[in-house]
Length: 197
Length: 197
DNA sequence: GTCTATATGTTGATAGAC
DNA sequence: GTCTATCAACATATAGAC
Image (cartoon, rainbow over all chains, first blue to last red; front, side, top):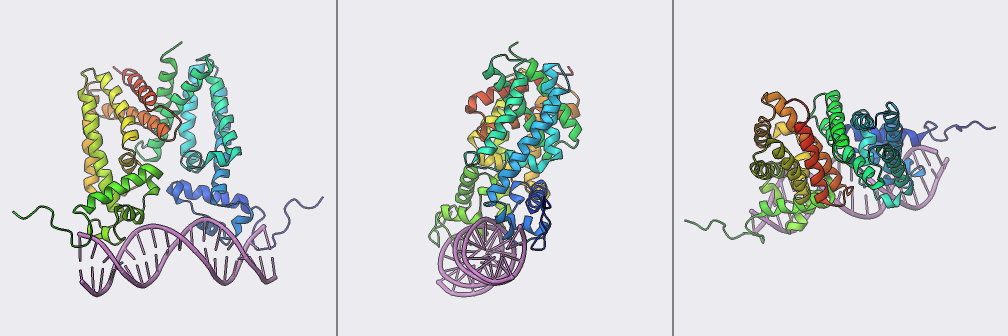
């Protein structure tokens, strides 16, 4: 077979697509979602501003690719958190902590999924990745709320609360990420054990 | 005395400063913080792009003015929420609900205070307005956590959780603002009554 | 698949007339 | 205090060469 990555004809590496995504993630992590511009990402990747258009239809398409990666990474992390215990309430607590940790450790992906402001309907693959993630969480919540709609409600409540702690950490209101994780976990525990039965 | 608002020499109303702030709030409410540009605010206010500079040093100064208004309005609303009951736990619950309601009803002010990304140190008046707000909340929390540091921690936790629900409403994850308010209040109740004593 | 060059639009900000 | 210029900077996106 031929080599998987042919020699670059221009003067670049074999995987510009990935290099652009990484640069974009850096930019978002540094300055928030609006800190990402295609032009600056090109500069960091060492290519001209025309190069991306062979890999992405436009600026939003790159963002959508990031958001999709973000959902997949969340599914991986939150799935692992859920699998780390059998106690349903503790599962929600660890999900909340993982939510905060993800926001801190992968701020670029985190903001790409939440604050990029994409027309989700224009990116079906993105909507599907989000739906897959939600399913994993809803499934876990079903142990606490057998009714599907109530399970979804619980996921939303726990996620919303955790999201707030994540936003506060990013904003620097919590000095310690660990502290914020613990608080988010605690809130999730209370919300999960709270009402119903 | 002379008339309070002299006749405009150009072709505009007597209170451009306010008109610009209102236009900016509209823009932020419509498209988020990055949806605000000085140029677009000028278009909506019906003045040239040079006009603002007689009223604000630069773009950030206008944003800072909005953020300051945002803190003051929060203090007004949250103060009223705290005063509406004597039960300390219920006070925190109503604060959380008011937080979500403020985000929904005054999204421009909400995002100006939280997501504008201002150098707070460059705007002392802004930092002071934020501090005043925090004091009101911390004071109320003292009934539940006599230790000042723990009281502050409780305020942060309740606010963080409420913030998440607010963000979820704005993002459209909660269809009903009322539902989100109720959930935020519930979470606040649990967090407040939760640990310590 | 990458480059150069370019078109086109937008922004923030300033100078100077009135 | 507002306007008319005008500027430099920067963005997204396309055409065409290699």
